[in-house]
Length: 334
Ligand code: KG4
Ligand code: ZN
Image: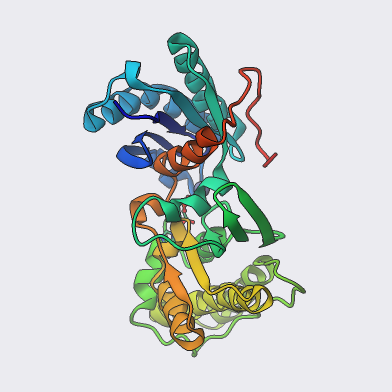
């Protein structure tokens, strides 16, 4: 019998996910991705909530099936409590509380951003503490100093768009479908990153801003399209390479600054944008240059997933950090 067996639920945006953890090991991690939003060019909150309701039970059943565990073996249920789309969060939170109540076991509320950072602890190689984590996804951009599993400090975050949003909105301007980040990455592979340069923000400290880049790309494209109707299609590779280079440079400059200021050399990346080939190369480049130890979790643990919620829930369980049943879900980080 495991000493700690948890069910974890993630439903903060457009992924319905359930994971089973036993004594710190992830036994299953089932993710249902809602693809319906693609045709609207972004996540429709009302549809997302409804789809979570439809998929949460089959996803949880599959998680139990793959893990070989039974609900009677659970010690607690962890769930994403904040931040995210409120309707989506409510589905996962309500399910988790009801399931736990029926089994008379406690719930553990987990912060989604905290969990992204701890996705680095799911599998070997794991970073030693303290480490820095750059969390980059469609909804978030943060540099976090992690001293221990439950002791974290946000050193910097975006003041407007997230890095993934910057990729997706730039892609949209190029006429690419949502989510455009992976497509920008693909076209950029055979482009010249130096041919088109875009304005980088001057933000003090470790915060990020991407709205200026977006505007710079928009005005540039408008001016070029006025001269040549086919400008984008004729230059798609170089445009994508230039956009990617700009976004990655903004991210890496702040990460390097954070490493210098803290003296920390264990550096992690988490979130969906960590799939970006330019960012991966950038991380490796600076790791070689400054002697960092660099870590990127498996892609399955980078995008939204319940395994990272289970991992965070596990550390909270060990410390006895349980939640009240009347704790509400919250769109913003508490
Ligand atoms: O973590 P994630 O799956 O979902 C959340 O937003 O929480 O991240 C999705 C984001 C999207 O903006 C997507 O365009 C971006 O990650 N993304 C990429 C790449 N793969 C995913 N952006 C740039 N290059 C990629 N290869
Ligand atoms: Zn996320």
